Length: 307
Image 1 (cartoon, rainbow, N blue to C red):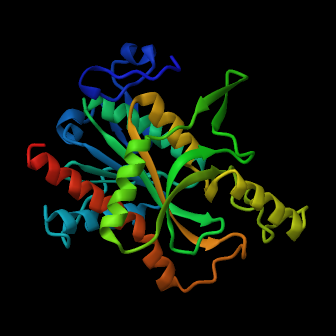
Image 2 (cartoon, one colour):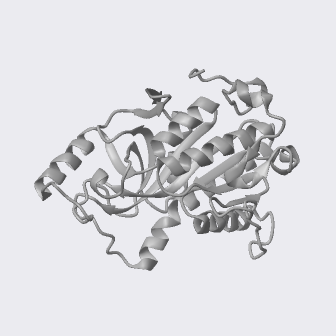
């Protein structure tokens, strides 16, 4: 069951025979379900899924896409499809689905289980999924966008570990390299900000797990921190965040073409706290949206041209 498989027409895979025995599949944290909603009618045309931490960011991404694609009035209201719950938010514009995932691996993993099932039940095909977010950079100027080559853990190994039934299960964290290259090419065409491809370190914590000196607890020195981050840099790590390993592993299992696009808000070799102005950080935060929006627009134009 760990093997990656693709069903006919590149449908989204689920690897769970127990789902076939369910009369209704309740996607509890989305407040959606197969018995209460016509998922193929609601989501069957989805080709692009963008996920990010905050509900506000994912709503603003939907409004941005609406303006870029000239599909609907960007000033119109886009209802939260998951309004029946406060766990996640979901918005849709044409073939683009925008979903929040909260902070950290547990939160994004719960969301992805239900999102993958939703796309499967909706009979979606040829879906591309991209995580857009923020991160701490290592040796990069703030505002640099990193497209993840491979997600690595806090020991710099490309794996995602999860304990299932008391056993540690290790899953692969490879992402789609051709998609990463396409996104890098899009950034070159945009020519608005620096974009690089590199490894992303995924941690279980924002403070000690990322070698910060400003948490409630800290048992190491500035030199210890610098030595660790230097080792990370030597291992090809360009940035640090808290979701990419679970995202990469689960997307690979389900046959989804996936990428992670995060902007760096600071250089962790130079500090731990965000001291830039709110306006500057906001402008940095829009860069992944601009890049992914351009990519989606380019893909839709290519398909419309019949290529």
